[in-house]
Amino acid sequence: MDNFKIKNYSEQLGKDLRLFDRLHLLIDTLGTTENLIEILDVLQKILDFDSHQSKMVRIDNPFWFPDTHWVTLAFAKFAMSASLSTTVVTLPQAQKVVELHFEEWPNASFRFTKAPLAAGGYYLEETAQNLRVLYWDVVRRRFYLDAQQFATLVQTEALQIAGVEALATFQKRLTAIAEQLAEADYDIVLPGSDTANQGNLVMTQKDLSADILDALFVSAAKQQFILKRIQNEQTGAEIAVGDVIIKLLQQRVDGGHAQWHYDIVDDHQKVTIYTLLQQLPFFYRWYMGNLNIVALKDKREVFVD
Image (tube, rainbow, N blue to C red; front, top):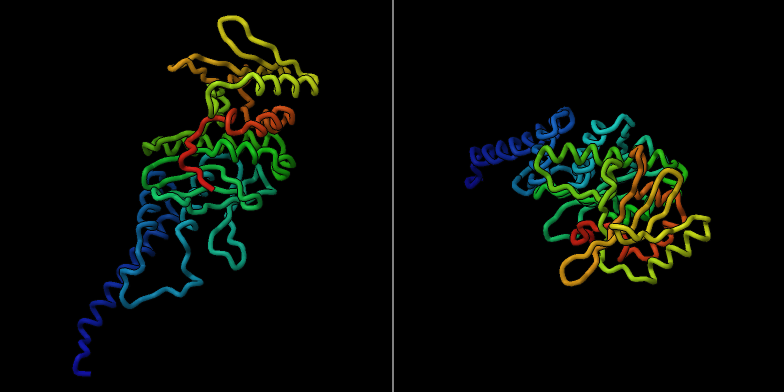
């Protein structure tokens, strides 16, 4: 007992309690604030919190949640403020990360998982299919849509049941969240998600082969759609779908290559390439069959399986 110094013990206990009191204040603020900048700041501090700084106090595991839990909760606050449709947060029994349920998409649920990258960051995934929607890097301020897996997601049963209006609402939600994050100087790349920006949607690869373009001609014809060659000031092809026109156009770039892109012409600005993929099975089959070539160009380097 001679070596036991009660003053040192008390001081260390006080440090530990103050450490966790700071975490308590951060979590309380995350739950109450509606301010965008404050949410991002508090989230960053929660992610930086290191419980191992505590020498004496430990929190029992059932009451300790991983970073992905807090990231999902912060995203829920953005989602709530970005859309008139309701966002519901639930914690499934025996799980440690909350799930998000968006009113427009009632048969699906979402949560964040850690991205397996040296740079860190998180993936928003649909839980039933484990399909990624986007990548969120809180530290480096990056917010990127996974154009390939999102295209897969639009034809899943849950979204087919919900319908095209659900997809349109969900995309509006994502673009509204992106607009909020842009105010915090985020790098935003959400190709094809904004109804007001459906021109010059660049494909992943250059130099679209004649075989791939011919395959679209054949697939469209089987569904009574006519793919026409464009032979004016532009080079490419187009399909008329009611009042909407899907154009596949090429532009010469350095090295003699041709960069292909989509222009979705819709005077009412109601459709996106993703709503067309949902509504046109022939277009979806062609698109997915040539995904690594004709999919929209995204920040592929952050999306790894």
